[in-house]
Image 1 (cartoon, rainbow, N blue to C red):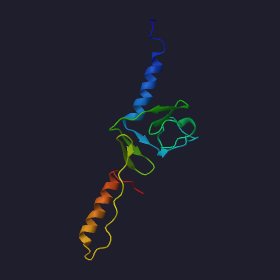
Image 2 (tube, rainbow, N blue to C red):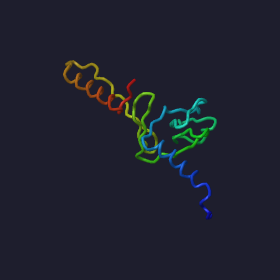
Image 3 (cartoon, one colour):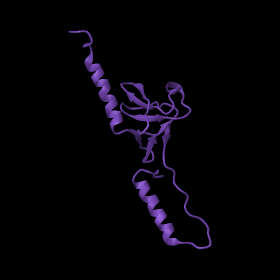
Image 4 (cartoon, rainbow, N blue to C red):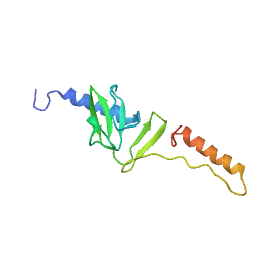
Length: 134
């Protein structure tokens, strides 16, 4: 056996775990506290005030694999699907999600057709994961 070949399967397995997590990234939610009942393959986005094992890992993707936490630093353009509310996040310096616009209020003339169209757009944006479902 040549030098550098020892335990090559370890590095291949490690790479496959990361590929599985990142290829179609879906996270449980944004969280500051590491969950105590995490299962292999589950991911979270580390929040702004992390504690315990996540201290100093703000905005990182926390992947639980083989009984330990692995942290992946996101890069601009990464997307993650939030399983908790069905919304997609985009990383651009930090994790961002679209916010629901306020429904039109007041006015002396109410255009019910325009309000209906705005509500339909909001509904479509929810169904596509652009806006949170709840």
